[in-house]
Image (cartoon, rainbow, N blue to C red; front, side, top):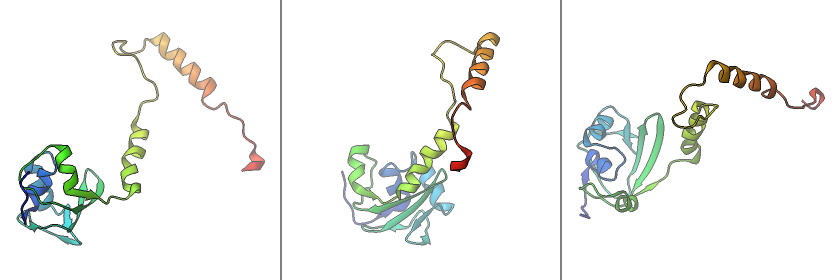
Length: 141
């Protein structure tokens, strides 16, 4: 692992595996999705140790503290000590909350294909019977 004083911000983001490619990293910095402190920067900005980065990626606001400067892309295990993830837990849980809403209600075994008309009717009947079968007292609300 090659340690340096300064490195281009787009290159560092790619080297520590925050972005999959240097082009994606460069485009994110150009479009203002990467900030150092509160300031938007250019891809040629020279990054140093102890700077805080704010990265907007796929709708998530990530925060990183630069601990080491590297120029070459390394494995994830070697890249992890180069930054500290300061992203709040609420932001980290945003993906879980989003994914739960996207998950399908039923799971079918691999290779079973679509349900037949008969199976679909059985599923619908089961849902109609059991989906709203819970006891609650309106006075407690």
